Length: 347
Image 1 (cartoon, helix red, strand yellow):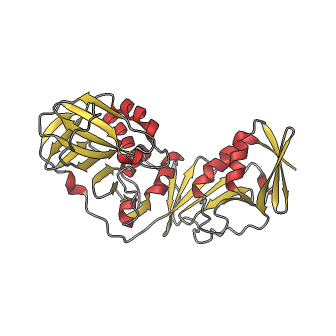
Image 2: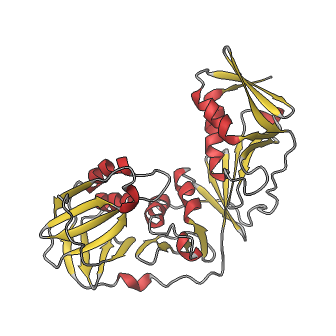
Image 3: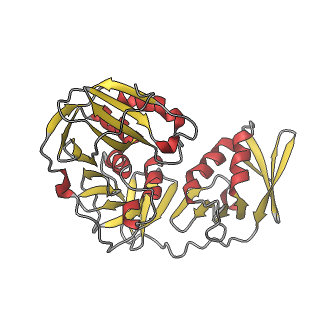
């Protein structure tokens, strides 16, 4: 019997969860794999590893979903774990559960290898800029390039062919690479602090115990985006309180996806409305005054990005069919279109 702190073990498992795949895309990719004092996950795109509080006493693969769910619902400070062949017994006060387990470790992470460079600290503001840029990548899998963030030696950028985000920062990357948006979100959420490069994988560290590796693509042709921000047009003052409006609208969002809002600017008002994708559970809209003297227009933007932009920047330029926010190191562009006809419940 192995005695372990429940919350500590739960935190370790949640930290490596980005490497799980519920569909089992590779062998044991929907399992937490314990080996040599660490816990591993790998789904062919992301690999995670964390020092395990179970130490080297625990070897084998445990079905991930029931284990993490059970630990989250238990209340004991300490629990007992008893690996017994094809099941793991989890024991608390007056309770016992058994979870499917495989004694043999079959998870193959050999292709990832070790980094080819030493780990180095990520620059300040890297994660902040990456978070905003990532919201401009596409969720549409029809073109791989647009589902990725483009990392360059001196900047990071992304586009879905409708909006563009760019953040100028010395990344330390030796050459340009693409990393999928789905992986980048975990890089941001785990608050990684260090990076090292491999040929096919980029390696990250968060704290002293967690490592994460993301598959990268090299030699992919990516659109040239630097000049698209050169726009001449009218200046507009972004209204205050948009972040709070987005927070209220988030009631209708799916936390696991990008959620977008439709923004109309007309007659001195900025009207924000949740998009069609969110209407399966409801709809939210809110309007605010805006300082802008120009033709009416409409655009769609990531709700999270709108919240970040409105909190950090106060001015945008509208012209040539585009809206541009120039925040110095961070730049954002979205294409515009004439507003749709006003709907009956618009405010």
